[in-house]
Length: 67
Picture 1 (cartoon, rainbow, N blue to C red):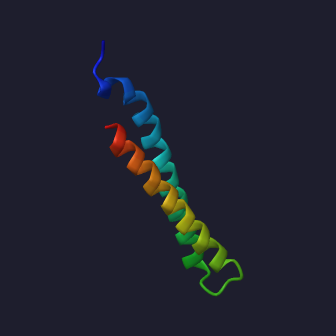
Picture 2: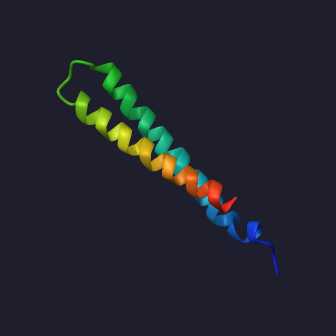
């Protein structure tokens, strides 16, 4: 029987990919907001970036718990 860590390696790997994707999306939102700081959507972009960052942190926490 594999130890506990081996059992979760696949999940951790998938979560790491999701974490990276969330990080990239958050960075894109920041870039969009910076490109047009006076635009109508800047506050929406910043709120979305914060939501993405919160989700990324939760995924990172799950990775740590399973590692």
